[in-house]
Image 1 (cartoon, protein in one colour):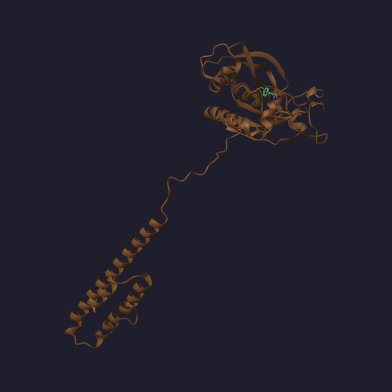
Image 2 (cartoon, rainbow, N blue to C red):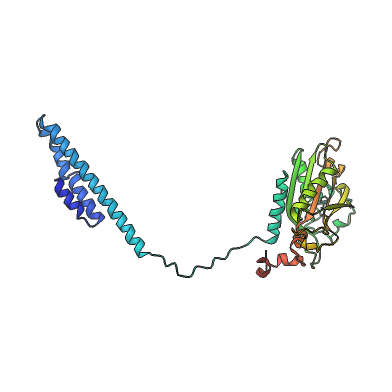
Length: 332
Ligand code: PHE
């Protein structure tokens, strides 16, 4: 029986036939199964002997079947590989990779710089209320920026935000100090588009509130930011300014005269360029948000992402960002 099985298995030519052989010997009505079934009618002396032999034969047949199966599989694989051989001399497919928009790249870079200093990213709505965009930020009732000619009104209480500063208020209302957030996003102003104006543009807001925060903390934070974003030689300078929601307020400029070759080509090595607006959060704003200005103080800043990106890459027209011309976008 073993010999027969061996011969049949070694000459088998397909998986189906191999299965037939298995059934023939080991199946329910298989030859070996019959033998094992007939054991009951054997004498007690014969039973263990025959049983042993029968089991050996079964093991043998099983392992022969297993081997034949393996051999057949690997042969099939080989044949398949031969048939499907890859022609490595064929020309490849042209894979075109997309790129991040230069503004997105800037935003990612800015986020990384501030996240590195321990800031969290906060978000606020682009369709904002007059309360959050102006009133809570201490803007006088007759402040010119409230005018229809500057701000897009949805109705008398609802506008498209003109700055990211309302996110300051939303965060302070919700979060107890210490607060350390940045908030990048779209802003809208009723401006006629030209090389330096777009009715939709981007700002990045920063806000820090804690006990004992001073102007020195603001200066240190912005200095680290400027050196990382514009190059390690960069110096910054504070110019007095006015914002309703900060006191004192400043416009902050970056130096362009000390170019060491790491990234200040944008201002051609001369003078100062305006970077951003900043200041110490006005006590009225803190009070509007339920924070006691006798206990807490803080600073805020806001920068134009489009403007900074234009400076950094030497782009001379803000409208290029929003035309989606691939010849422009591909350069970054
Ligand atoms: N929101 C101001 C602007 O749009 C910038 C700013 C933000 C100034 C925070 C001071 C503090 O010009």
